Length: 152
Image 1 (tube, one colour):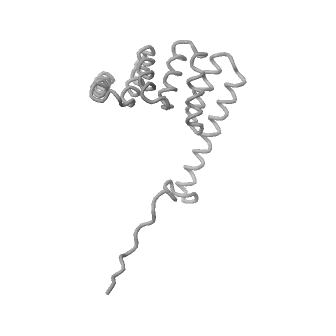
Image 2: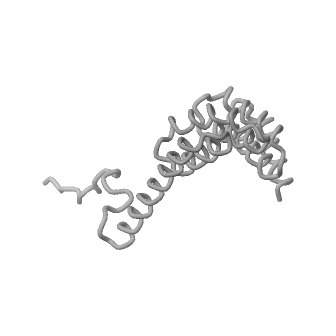
Image 3: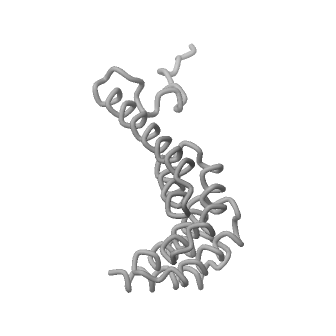
């Protein structure tokens, strides 16, 4: 299935070369299939089209970690966290990179932040499921229109 998905993304890249998403998703596939060098190239192409893609920045970070170069991952993961500060996953990845780079205090701090964000997300979900918290779309939709008035 990875081969088929890869071919579909490559077709999309040829059809829409100015859209970063196909490059980003192709990079993820390369990471998932153990090819961090090709993944780096795809994430860089995505970022050349849109430099504010946290998942592409994180992808570069992950690729460097997998290549055994966690210090090179740090600026990319730090920028990804700055773009999405409420992402437990990004804080976790950054924490892992710091730990692998040998900076235990900062790594542990990031891991703690990832745990805090994940616990907060679970608490919000539990509140929503129990009916005690606000529904997920509360306040985001306009009020439903009322029945039309008839004028005589």
